[in-house]
Length: 238
Image 1 (spheres, rainbow, N blue to C red):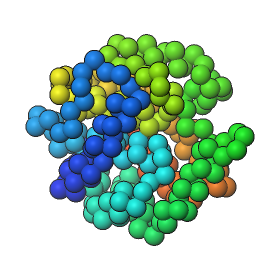
Image 2 (cartoon, rainbow, N blue to C red):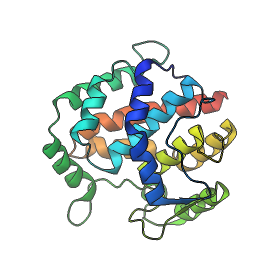
Image 3 (cartoon, rainbow, N blue to C red):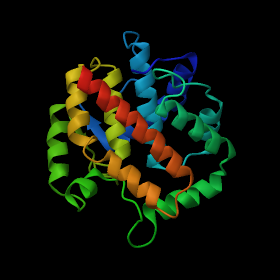
């Protein structure tokens, strides 16, 4: 379980508007996304939503200077059953590399690792890791899952629904709710995570660790993997 701190709320608000704008750009929803955190959301869930938002931002595009500074200066956002948890150590390692990162160099690292010319060294799409190809059966399953939640990809969106950032944004929306709908029950959060993130996040991390072009993103991937590990464990106990 995650324990929230004063820094978790600060991190949540610092990335909130960017995530909400991306949800509007990638997905058409049955309700208008609301930029505030509902008062009934627990501190633990606020911390979870903050981390989903952070992971989404990190993998959607190369982080800008402001986000890097927020990470480096956010203190001990993570308190997960002891300060020496794997997630806690991964967070401090991410803070360390964020503090010394160069924005232009990260732009190049992101492009070389996830875009590149020809075949990218690392794909950020779940269908590749589950089925071996892009736009395969897992995307159709995901679209069915999203439709049940009142979500659908906007035709003008350049990314498919199985991008890791889009999936994290959906999880964040399920945790916080929006201006018209309350937060989703844990059972709904669990089903979406188990079906659409759990089957492939470890393989994504392994691919990034093997990528010669990745440096900062190896730490980002390690942090994301330990967070997803904790999510899966918590869902199994719920």
